[in-house]
Image 1: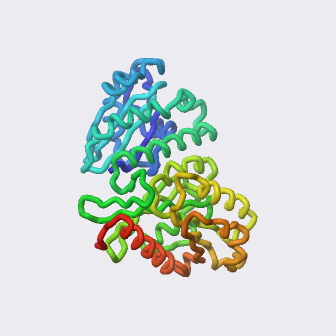
Image 2: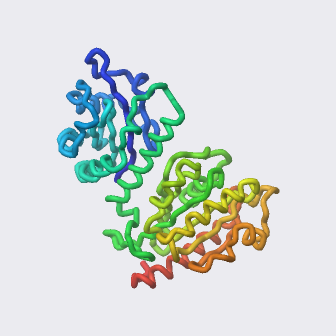
Image 3: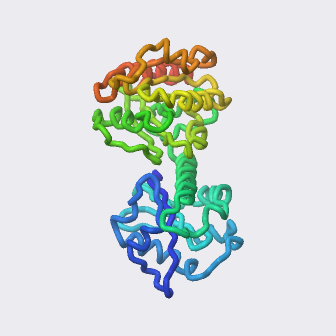
Length: 352
């Protein structure tokens, strides 16, 4: 399985290809684990060595053809970590990190295809400042996009199919149901995922994040629920559809205590519901943070504010939740179980 993706600017100084970690960290981005390479200096050294020939030359971006990329991409292993590294213009290295069971070469062709599709020159300009905000956002968004598409490419837990209501069955005959989780930042999506997967909740455990997460939860029936939790900041919302493709269920999370952002939350809700690609997919509208006094706890008020009565192309339901109090969590699971039972029936899959 693909676990992380990283981008490093490694400019050799005086033909010295062994920069120290402090120098590298200044021109380094990774997703979703920001420090994935810094547990072992051997990993950094081997990455640099694998691209030594390319890094010592000042190639223009015109040189980076498909043949060049294929011949210079390298699958390497360090300390049990499988990597696929590929050179980019302006002395950048793009890398993928896999678990020990995955062959990096299986991803080589797809990575090169995506490189040619997404990586324009504007993404790869040198870091003129240590953390210039607009440049960092572009590169972070790029890594997010590539990570999502590569996970779609080969990870069976993606549940990536073109047919609406299609449920995949893995090699162990376990049905996999994909739930796309979305909502604007501060809604509590990541905390909800942690609670569903671990049963734990801590105040301020998660800060608003740029990290896309896949969370697996197994129902008592044996069906695996694959939650796709997307970042809620505005810069990442254009990637929501990319992550939502082939979802079986939609889970929208609202911070009901922040009524000043209701217009923004409503707009983003309907931006997704109006997409043809997501037509007919059942929706659970989770009104979160009901433990806060500012929350509007009346379902009729929420329905009116968000025009939920205008939803006619799918099943939908409102559930009120408080993560610290575990309120609404059982009801959420019950709704998912009901929808899963219907999906299995539609797909002719026997309960496991």
